[in-house]
Amino acid sequence: MKPLFITPSMVLSLLLFTMEGVFCFAQQGALGMQFQPTFNGKPVTFDSTTFLTASGARITFSMLKFYVSGITIHGMDSPSISTSDHVLVDVTEPHNVDVPSAPWGRGQAVSFTIGVDSIVNEQGPREGALDPRNGMYWTWATGYIFLKLEGTLEAPGVARRVYEIHVGGYKAPYQNTFRVTLPVEGRSWREPLIVDVALDRFFDAEPAFDITKRPSVTDARQASDVIDRLRGMFRVR
Amino acid sequence: MHGKHPTSSTVFEGCSVSGSARELALALIAISVAVIAHNHDNTDTARIPQPPGFPERVYRGGPCASDSAVAALGAMLFEDPILSVDSSTSCQTCHQPFAAFAHIDHALSHGVEGRIGRRNVPALQNLAWQTSFMWDGSIANLDMQSLSPITGHEEMSENLDHLLAKLNAHPTYPLRFRSAFGSDTITIPRVLRALGRFVAGLVSADSRYDRAMQGKDTLAENEQRGLQLFRRHCATCHTEPLFTNNGFASNGLQPNAASPDSGRIRITHDERDLFCFKVPSLRNITRTHPYMHDGRFKRLRDVLAHYSNTAALPDHTDPRVRAIGPLSDMERKDIIAFLMMLE
Image (cartoon, rainbow over all chains, first blue to last red; front, side, top):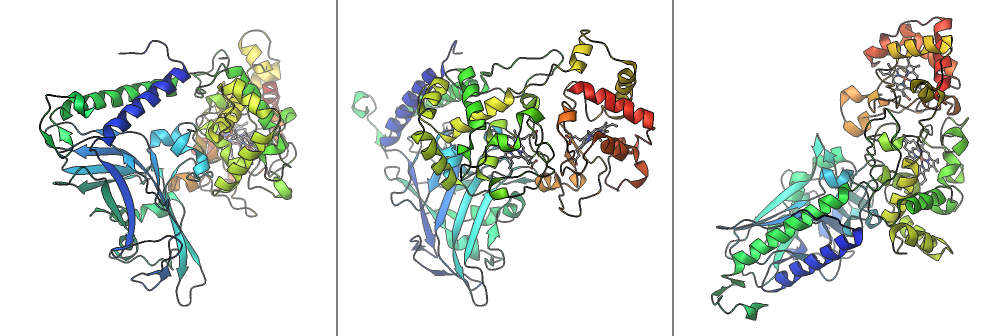
């Protein structure tokens, strides 16, 4: 089925049309995903609640944004369905971002990628979630920032008042996109799937991450050190 | 839609028996979307002439209403200081048309508020055949390149919003965007693509060298000798007809003590790339002085003296530069005579 002649506007309308189709399906009893930030099981209110990390820093959160793509539902007897588009999840938005996905009832696991793959990274600019205007792009070197975690910081004897964890990097040896797989067996698919982003795991998973010593992660090499901590944050309730 | 499936009576957790049919349909949709999207990304919309002997063009443009209108819009943006925070600096401030879009006599670039940049401004030419950009190859896509000069810093969403507001309020830009892209919505991707398309169209392929290669001009004796010497000593890196192999190397410069620049290693984190820089094209070389990433050499004579000075080369020097060996005065002059044909 090879299209013979496609103008950009035809492509756009086709895309819109099919996207709409996907949404329709998704609505009826299907999976949506919501990301909810927590710290030691307590909900996180951005810019206000203060938390204490294991290494003794008092922190708040001001930003948590990340790219999600390739959402796949792994089932028993049929192929998994994957959405290929990148969604920029901004966890600070009051109405949590729903990630549209497929209608489904027998999933055993759901998986998704955090980050932007090398092909998209090296392609030209795109509208929408990948628009560089969203501030998720390193301009000194080609590449999207996959995840931004920022906030304030206070600890005895530490002058620094803010921290910023920016993760990106799509080229070896610092290829930092990562995949998260979560068990979802026996869930009700009438409700959106709530994915906890357990921020305490980032700071306190062994060995604890001393944010006062590394308050800023801003390139691919530094980011490669924190990928496992980030992956560990995602959990289903 | 649910009610339209009288046969699917077993509904379990929102998923009916016809679920797998639906899944299949969805998968098919997903595949066709992927096929179309793929197709769409690969469309070569850029009408850039293919000079004889050039390899296949890398730059391919993107969806637009009119390629020539995109290029014209890019040209307008390129010379418009509206792109800088204080409306003082345009692309052209640094990339001067009469200097093959480099900055004559400036070793390091000058930006807004007279800030001095880190590196020498390169010529902009034949970028459509180039595989990476900047002296360290840090940028992989020509359309994305402009983000770097426009924002200057990595945190920039604020400035880009400001830029969009300025462009939207402008008397002619909305119209220009309409003729280029089919609607007057001004977006950052469109701004970037217009600039990218304009610079991609800066082609250098009609120098005396090119005409001589096509048999339309002849080389003088010294130019002929220069060509032979060039092919022996320089062309593994400065490969014809682009006069670059799109690679990275250390050509034996001593690290700059005043402004340390470790080069490509910053991007690859690979020890072998320490002090490596992009092999620049040598087209229009007589117009793009000063030379090298930090503009340390004012004249071509100085460059040839450097390549000839094999005794004093630092450890990280590429063996192909080491192999050049001392060049006589006559040989240096012949090479320069040949390089002057590239204008």
